[in-house]
Image 1 (cartoon, helix red, strand yellow):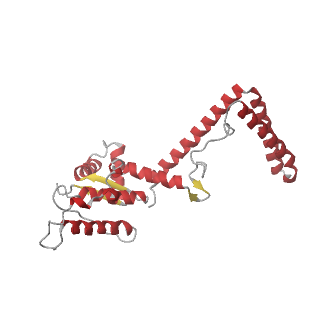
Image 2 (tube, one colour):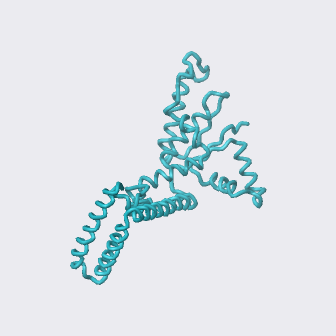
Image 3 (spheres, one colour):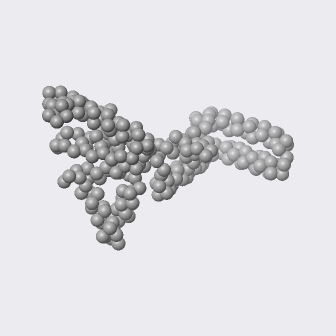
Length: 260
């Protein structure tokens, strides 16, 4: 599933916030350590100065002459770690602490999305689906066939209730597994309490986990959003307009209680 521009921008803003907060945290740790160990300030200044000299020589094409500077920087680094350790600080206390050590918080490793970006996309899609909490319990892992008795048989199909629900679940799994290749719809119908909504939640869970966008509405809420965005657009809140847009952009739209 390709994220919309709005969804992508939302995730990138969160990464920017993480990077800014991590820099602030690092600056606070440095200030604390330098207050406790005044010698650290001088060491940090020397390391910064030597690093600038290295960069200058590289720009001037004198890469072969930076080995002595690297040696000095390494020596200062060892001394700094020793000071920190003796004062009871972790050796990496002054270093940047990344939220994701793999990509170091831009969300990408080279041109490839990091696993943390993919997870951030899934989390965002969950939040926008209106199903965040319910899917923790209503999913295929928690689906129980024992609620459907083998003694109750349908006269038309000849299948009992257990056989019937097993066939329906198989159809749902097929729908999920072939979602990107086959473009079908599903209509669940039956009496109250037979598991229609539960099954839609099962499907939503699987598709959200594979980074597809899923939106869930009761029929009442859906028509409320559609009517507000259509006839009261001037007065509609941004959230309603975003929901209206998501209805047409999402990979799967679930409408519950459509018959009512």
